[in-house]
Length: 334
Image (cartoon, rainbow, N blue to C red; front, side, top):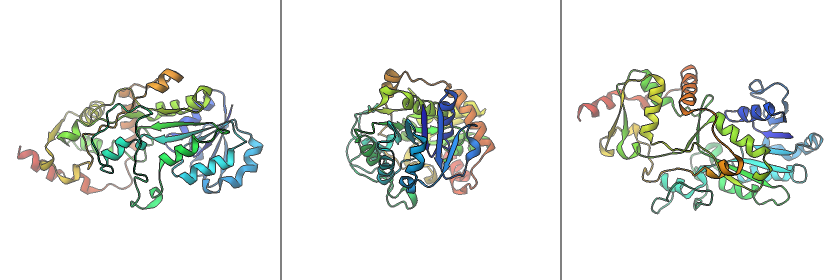
């Protein structure tokens, strides 16, 4: 098969491309031309801005891709542009979404009222009632809304869609550096890491980047995935305390996790979530229908991530996130 991947050069994308090419598929990547070296040899490149995607249709007609994988559809216009460009040209559209579409995410972030939704969340679980969860934050996320992306992708009978709802993704290349705050404390020799007591029990579905990419590639090559939505992530969602402990074990840290009630926590360590709402996804559908399973153990995945974080710390580190004097003071008062 011939796949056209939109935005396949950052974090998850290169692993998707590598999976497809290793399986003998032809891959062309449409991107801005900023990270070509990370992709396997033999991959074709088309440079362009996705906002101008319809103007490239004559180029895509010559390529005649069997399917399109959109790694970065953030807004409804993004999705409509892809559909307009590839309707009548490709046989299928695969779009990467997020588990932030669920109403549970709105309640976790204090965006929507109501009691916690039960978990694990199946694909039919209620979606957020409030759209545009990051509006007001400024920048490119002002119009971000995966719910609207999914509606467009799944609403095209002549371009069957597949949607993959991703969890928190970690691994080498994570530009959000999700492990860094914990790992820095460990490498700084901190004897303890403080967590708010309720937040320490909060559970979140996670996934290692190579396994997440494998799920995307599997859905792209599987005809059965047409017209389906899949949650992706590890089968067991660890609590935050368990997650920090696992990182510490891999990192060789000999300290301990200390939990405190909210009123005693330093402000810079609070997550500002409703920890009574777990964000745990049921990932059984993709496992049963497509035969998906992880190929990298969690310890190995964390080891690779820790090694990468140590070699590639963030370019800018906010010292206010590491107020060790304040953290020591509250522990001494216990």
